[in-house]
Image 1 (cartoon, rainbow over the protein chains, first blue to last red):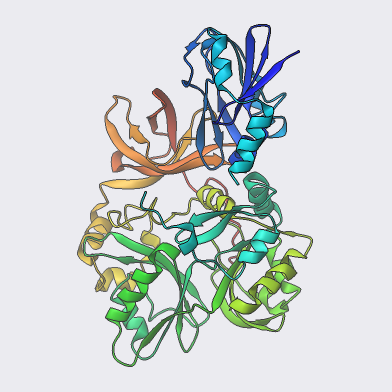
Image 2: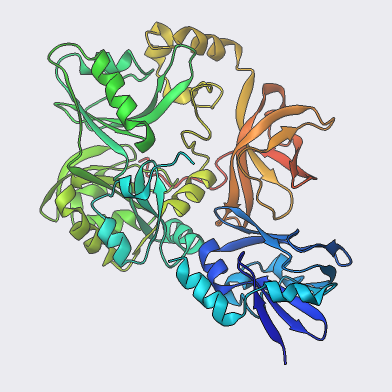
Length: 125
Length: 371
């Protein structure tokens, strides 16, 4: 059973067996609009919580995707390079960005669960 | 932050319609404007290239100049052959400063008993003040606050508009007429800023929303926002004031010499004429160019351009993803010696050098109806 966490920068982290899959939320993709370019981290790179991990560009602007926790990148979703629109179509499944290890699982306690994130987004109006 | 509080933003006559259509509204030039509708910028852009798109450009300034000497006074501010502009024709020009820099770019139509100008929203107050200060006694300048401005653009625009007024079929690119459109007094110009055939329609503000809804009821028409307007004009190689043109950029550097008529080149008589005429004769030190970045990453406004040796040679002034081409494109300024198509340049994107090639513009062929 995977646990789902959310950041206030609108990333989601699906944690399964000590590894997190990271992507951007439905709300984030709606705000961005049509995604035309994704820059992914390098497999093996180390990320500290809060580091810029990836870049997502819509027609209008570039935005950063941050590491919600610390760890090492173990995989990236190469499909996004050729098909960035997957981020719009399936933000919380096929449009994942990268997978990473958790060097400090305790950091997860600082993130939101699904209900808290839903309330957070509603609060943004 | 020193921005305008949202409460102070102005709304166009189509504001309620934008909301009803589900637009995302953003502050732009003091107005709350639709940046996109639910279809999204990519679809709205392609809609305009393939069918017809309706844009609300009512934030732009519509100015009526009338009275004796109006054309001559306008010529004192801009290198436009206003006195030689035939009735029913529209021309592109720009207000210049003493250094030959561009204060705003605008369209002028000869409406017979007056001149009709369309100027940029962010510049309209300054433009009107500039005109008022220059006009002789008995000549009037009015910002038309009771008119909306719609742009119907795309290869199907003419067929759609001809259903409401068959005579628009007879207009050529840059023709302008007073017409009755669905019973409304309208000024229709066969012009726009997307690179496509199309029309700009000035009509009474209080009837504009109903008229827009009528156009949107036609099967070929869908609404498009400022996002698509920007990507369309970039593909068409058209300058956006405040980005590709500003007070430090001359029309010659910007590649807009074509908009300065023969008589005005010969006679001068507009601000910065000496500098502009010298640049016409000797060539400018820098030129506006098109750029094709290598790879998929958009290279955006503000990035510095370097030559093969790393020497800084210019800057990107507009850049982004070109939906019709499925790749990034950009425009900017470089030293004149590096402005030829094929020249290889680099820009640093997020710490990594990225290759670009100077390319001819427009990136997408214009669809204007010239004959």
